[in-house]
Length: 164
Image (cartoon, one colour):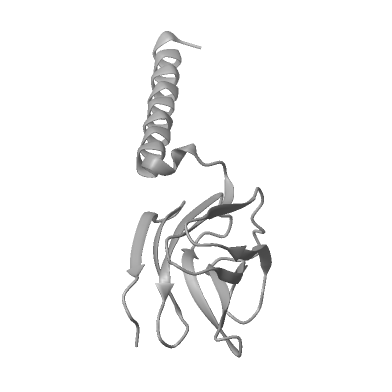
């Protein structure tokens, strides 16, 4: 093998290794404050309302009515309390899933809220930080969400004012 081919292969391999390094650095930079969380699904719930919140169920599904993977349930979270759920594995059968929150409304009905959209076929990391700020006059939760998922990165939304 002549020297030109040898140095060309070394240069090409070095280029791809540097490119891989930049890709890894960009992924880390995109995670920002969510870098400290492990792969899997992490849900942190803070109750900053003045009442106890009960029966919060979290699950991953293709549509809100059919559970694909149960993530966990919080039976009761009192005023000023916080808790978290974690599962290390995300079932990877199909893309276009969401992480949902199912909770009772006035003990007679239930509501389902999408907390994160999972576009990837094999999502590796989903973090949801849910702050419950109260309950509106129809019984629906008022809350803020900050989160991270590994396709679109960081996101947040605010449903903490009275909803229609």
